Length: 124
Image (cartoon, rainbow, N blue to C red):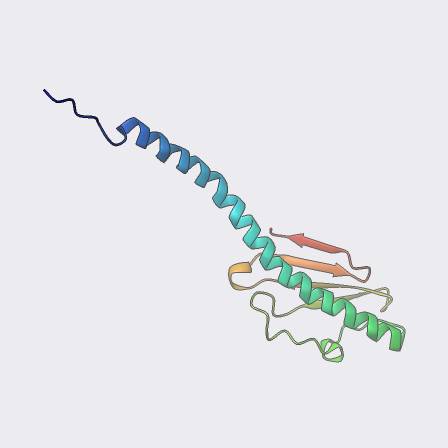
C-alpha cells in the first residue's frame, strides 16, 4: 500500500483563523469609524480657522469683532459636511466664538473656536 500525504488544513485550523480575523475586525472597525469622524471634524476646524482669520482682519480694521457673516466673505460651497456656521459675540464685540455643526454623515459633530484659536469638539 502506498502512503498518501495529507494536504490542506483541518477544520480546527480554519476555525481558529476565522476567530482571530473576527476578533481583529471587532477591534479595528470602531477605531476606523472614530478616525473617519475625526477626519470629518477636520473640515469643520478648517472652516472655523478661516472664520477666525477673517474675524482678526475685521478686528484690526474696526477694533471689534462682527457677527455679520457677509462682512467676513467666507465661502463654504466647497465643503461637504460643514456648510454653515454661527458667530456669537462676547463683551460687545471684544471677543467671539464661532460654531459649526456637521450635516449628512457628520451629523452630530460640532466644532467651536474662540478668538484665541482654542478648538472644542463634541460628538466625536
